[in-house]
Image (cartoon, rainbow, N blue to C red; front, side):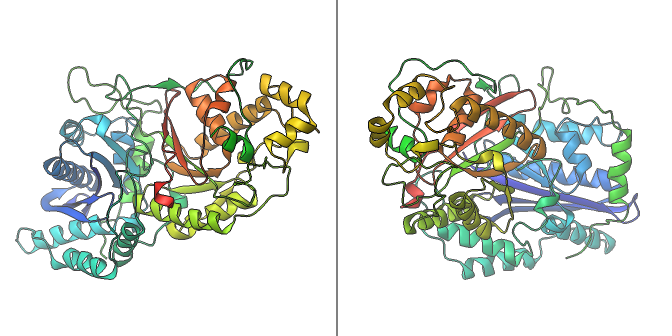
Length: 492
């Protein structure tokens, strides 16, 4: 399934006044411009022009591929919030436009994201060109500027051959970065300002998560509090040892900010459904908070299969680990869906996160709750060495999530409690956004386990390779869905 990005804008020189819109469809994997739409629409308001731009962009995406997943990016919070179903649509001129937009593609294929005004330059330029053409009494026609931008970007970056489906190459990352640079889009600029809507995991970098009843599937509940006693199974440890053992222009902007502020004051506080697309159109819960989970790259302890938690020597990445971090950074840059990065405070995760952040142009926030489990006196030992030195403590640890490693380490039950609190904190902080969490084996396994409602012993039945990716999407109704990439083919 293809993934498109639709960027749309509209403006009115007078509000209401001479108005126009612009829309662009972009290939999410390569950054290539696939279609442009723009039109002078006569006298209208900013918001009507913005909705007209949205409609035109969605129709262009549908004409290219009616089965594609579409991520809509606009600098109009009003349109984003209304189309996401969180704000009511009261204005009589916008209701039919919103309903029209909702009928173009199935709701399950579309997510909405707000972005800062300075990042919407392409659609803004098209809208201004349309208004300028209307002022001259002419119809809009594409200028050479976009073609020139794409050509320059293509000349400045030679993509490598495409790898397996879902795999991204460093060449594609270079091409995408070049396109962004020539369009004046500094990667990551203004990302910290994003608050309303995410780049949901439905684009290339994070999972497309269907939910039942609204065209998408509610796979598993995010129970969060599952703490059943572990019994049975053939367990293996967490941490390093556990992993091994378990295997230009301004589109009539005057008054646009005021439009959104006035609209915000006039909408109902309670969530509503998206514009009806039929008799039984389901509600749109909005885009999820999507956590893309990245395990750090290798350290010297990783190939030795030693316990490496938060109470040990805090090793840095090895040369292999640094190479893995650079490669996964290139892969995530090519996917282009990460909006923020949060890392564990330990050296290996901060170093891995730093490599990704440098490629994406983002800052790294440190969250102590993402640290690895403290394995107490077992830190630095192999599983076999622990069995020789502390057999009774190891057996108790394998049998119950409440048991602590020798020397006052952290139990898996305590880790689960910490991770549930950290999860809730991050969901609130990054609602509706796609965030990269750079962390460790046990925290990732625990987030996956809680999302699936699986018992504690399931921790011993998961394997996470160094620098591997997984993802969990958390929806507004409390459900969650998991995607296990665990694919390191892009790292070799």
